[in-house]
Image (cartoon, rainbow, N blue to C red; front, side, top):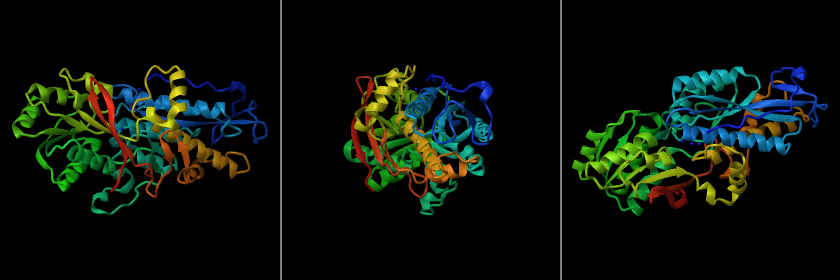
Length: 410
């Protein structure tokens, strides 16, 4: 599950020519097959655009914006112009649910990208399902979102047909991390801490299960509270446990402080976490040198992918004030999946967007398959991405550096 300032998308609409319909607005300046009229539809965005996680949220928003601008520039869907509607959930589930209702009520919205946090996603899924509105997260990793609460028992059941994601799940990420820690980093006795949130606690549980299966020892477990800053008691527990490493399920603001305080307590051991800590803010949150700390993230480093060269170039040329961050490429691909679904819906309807297109677009999203920024983009029967690539990053000389990328093998 991440950087700021969205360039506002302007459309060539004349106000006096607006005529709202169930699928958007139309003007007389477009070409295409809709009798010379251009239909404008929106892709919604929900992410933490303010607060401590905004470096991730702004990257999500900007990357969707870039996808929309690219589609409009290339006339990707004849007769259709895209715009964005971005809402700030502040990483709060209740706010996310309110935003979901707003997006559903906006009839121009034909699909949405987000949110970043798995806990926020849980509050939104049902709202979108009732409206047949496609939701594609570029960052959620909690398995229950696509496979149901009993996934760990092998009882997989998709809760909501409207929910998809371009990020792989923690079933993959947690096991990948444990295998690297045990086999590559040679860590045998780890202390595990989580932030009691949907994402962090779930990831930590999967890590523990796999680490123990491999033969590793869990020296102890504990929990911290989000937005607190004093983790001295936990740090002392870790030191006294004799652990040779720490695994943290949570986000970078708390993760960076935990790493700092563990080292100040005298335990000069590495801390590892998931994509929630893979952010420059993790490094700057620690006053101690935290070289050697590790984090996993979904996919391969975007900068190293041939498929992402155009995305990186265009993003850097786009004037955005914040980096695309961890989830930029996945956000672009999520938006492009919606755009391609709109394209198919238009093609299947004699070159015109149906008056109420959400259900047809939803059906088309489940069938998309294309070469995206992050690799092949397609979804399985649960709405999960078929892309199982991950990367381990290590703090080296005060910055994250990739040390291993691989496709997860069960």
